[in-house]
Image 1 (cartoon, one colour):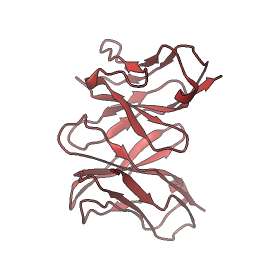
Image 2: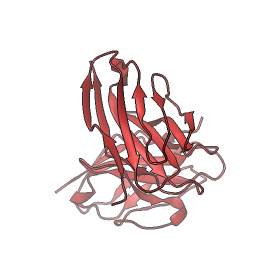
Image 3: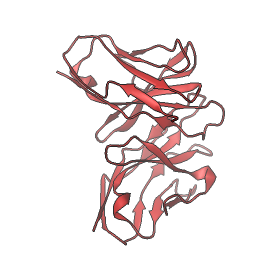
Image 4: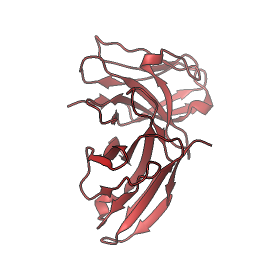
Length: 110
Length: 114
């Protein structure tokens, strides 16, 4: 079964500290991977996708096929980064389904 | 403003009382989907629709129905709700074609079944 695993339910760091939110996926060829973010009282929104190789709000994520990982990183956390982060992959076939990890709450303390 | 809307945002009901959660998008997206979000489980797909009159089951379809009579609307129907359907529900839409296209999510509907 295709799976996405986020091992940490909660990650708490101080402002200015580096952040790494872990994500591992079950292997299946060339996955399409995403990070979605949900700020307090807001809807889920796309943060970045691996195919774009982009940096959004200072966050980057590198696909490591050898380790089947797609960790989200930011060198200096800001208080406004506090949110729930979901790693997701596109499901197989043409269902359009996103398979989500369990989510990690990032808490950035002042 | 391009968006996905859901109604109601909050609903408390009792076991067995039929309810419908509406979802509407104004982006002319072909693909629409329903997810439920539960603590420790992330989001799981309930049903999806590739286009008008084309729907199919996701991972957790039991106890739910959907319809897609118009492109913009994709209601979620609980014919006989039960307490295990207490959850936070999200509707999503995206264009068809490239699978890495962004999915746009609604604001969520928090349902409590007593």
